[in-house]
Image 1 (cartoon, helix red, strand yellow):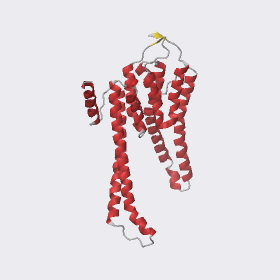
Image 2 (tube, rainbow, N blue to C red; image 1 turned 90 degrees about the horizontal axis):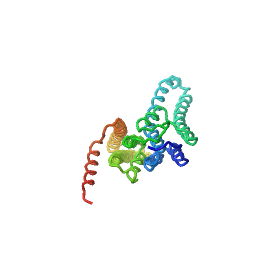
Image 3 (tube, helix red, strand yellow; image 1 turned 45 degrees about the vertical axis):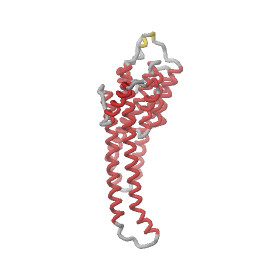
Image 4 (tube, helix red, strand yellow; image 1 turned 30 degrees about the vertical axis):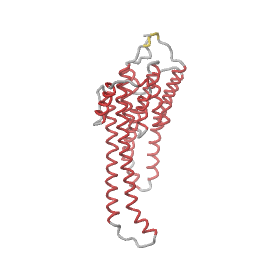
Length: 302
């Protein structure tokens, strides 16, 4: 332990950058992940604020999205009389737009407050999330001495938030890539979770895009003969069986995509939650494969 010292200008700067990266949306995950990976062994102040910013952009964004969905659902039910009245459609649309943008503005406002407080040299805790995180990793800004943080719990939070980052398609893989590529983040624990997270999110995203693209191609092939017939000026006949079958296959692909996306989102969120609760988690098939591959790499002769 060493005597507590106020945060330096460099520490404040890294904390501010981590908070304000929220404005980059999914790509903003890079900054707190990078900041924590590179500085968590050098500064407990940076470690806490970078992890807190990372948690807010992954788990926090998930919670905000659920809150927005709940608020819009309640608003829709409450404003149904406007739709039934017919002339209230403008008010219905306006209320939904205002609530959506209002919630997102509030989501962005809180990190701005955090950045300002760090500039002033004060500590900042996100509502609900911040103090729980501080206790979990052993961060106490009021302590008379700089106590080392719980490194194992830091890594557990970082791995958990990397799983929660699946809420951002494609960009959700960026934190895991940071942990995997930077030497300071290559503990076996983080390496395992980074690898299985990248593979799971990559496969899930690829399957979604392939099925979505296939559905679009099938739909295009189904309606193209009808479009050509209409443009030729000929009377519209009954669509050929190929078009009907193609549209049926398109609907099947669309339904599969609509089922897959929530499924892999739920799996990713569940993985993050289990890890945060102190459990180990392996994705079906992928987790076991990554573990066996790491074991082979560790026992292989140099």
